[in-house]
Figure 1 (cartoon, rainbow, N blue to C red):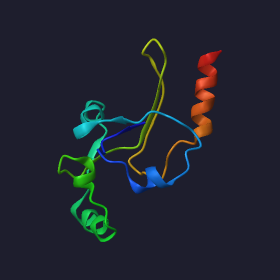
Figure 2: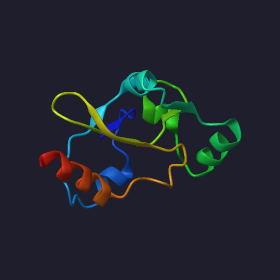
Figure 3: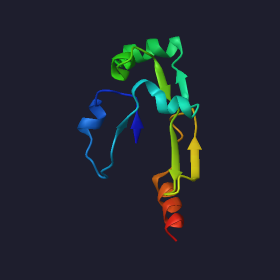
Figure 4: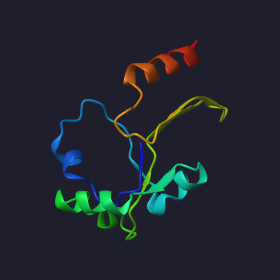
Length: 108
């Protein structure tokens, strides 16, 4: 997982960890920017986030309201991208089972 956030969120610290994985920090969204996967949260939505106590600029550590588009890339050991899913609607994400199936096919 890659995230621009510099601090762990309450969700990261409170939820049980059924799967362990490494969290890579993408400070300033530099990696996401290279893939064209960054957007700025619109001003009206920034106000809504603020009402819920979400301080994205502080969480990002760079003072911005920029976020990466949720995406999944499966890259084989040779560096070839074998599967990609990216959707600006954060509520639509690939099912973990889809990722597992792609990985199984690579293992054959």
